Length: 211
Ligand SMILES: [Ca+2]
Ligand SMILES: [Ca+2]
Ligand SMILES: [Ca+2]
Image 1 (tube, protein in one colour):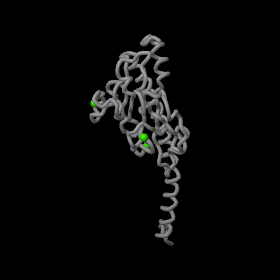
Image 2 (image 1 turned 135 degrees about the vertical axis):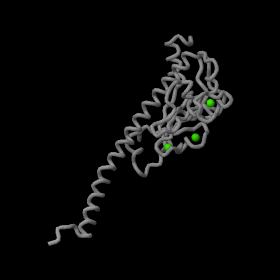
Image 3 (image 1 turned 30 degrees about the horizontal axis):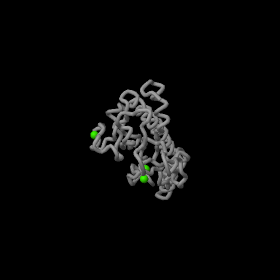
């Protein structure tokens, strides 16, 4: 009597094993992505805190790093989107997918901030919306957003309005833990922004500016 496996039996065993492994690995991968999303969310909040600390100490916000990753601000390109000046802020400049965190700031806030500092005159406010187009800030007039930081997520690319370098950005906090791990999801960016009023509150509390 042949006690070995036949080719057919071996095929069934291998198929069963592959189904079992894919069933185990798929939730594991999704959990890992959720972990990376939460870690990046915390990192972005810490980055906002570091920006506020920088402003309290130096009475201004830093310009982006546009020179290719040294982490130092580049004042010549202050009005452009760039990488986070992580070295000046003393924070991690890479997200959990090892890609640079992006940063943009209202140029008027990169020189000495006073209680009367405002945005540039017209068509220069940052506007933020969800990917379905729902507006999270006003689109006409002063949005009071003076800085944005964002991760380009697992796909390493700026998605939706985060891809073209203009002043409109997309944030989708509704989908942080669910849609972002879906295999067919095409939007996986994560963003935090800094409001002028939040910054002023923190600077006044720290006696850095006086109303
Ligand atoms: Ca630089
Ligand atoms: Ca992305
Ligand atoms: Ca845009």
